[in-house]
Length: 153
Image (tube, rainbow, N blue to C red):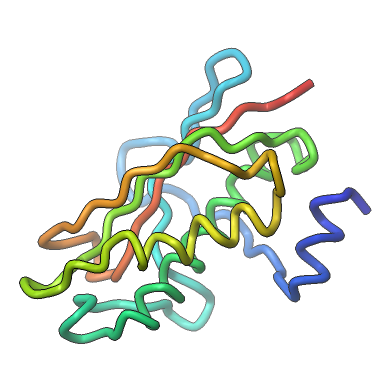
């Protein structure tokens, strides 16, 4: 078992199968050693976390939703890196939070994703980041995060 797979196991995280795209795009695009991963929603096998953070969902729900996005991103990383997560170095995360009009804790929500990425990948998980509040997200999911990472040989 790889170092990252062991870390996931110690955190009690089982990665899902990657979800196929729902429209005319690809899940990930590689150019050289850089991979851009399409936005991953706050979904899981039981449905996921939907709604407007600050209205339908609490801050804690938003943080959990962002963590779900991180798990889905890691599954995409694994697929794009031919199954070897030890070759992954995370470069950037861009998070979108479906936020209510009086909800301003967008960075705190995104910490749910960032913290898990760093917990799993350590130094190779430290990344640049943007956290953006938006009016609506696909299928009413609470959070969506896309990523750029490098495959290290």
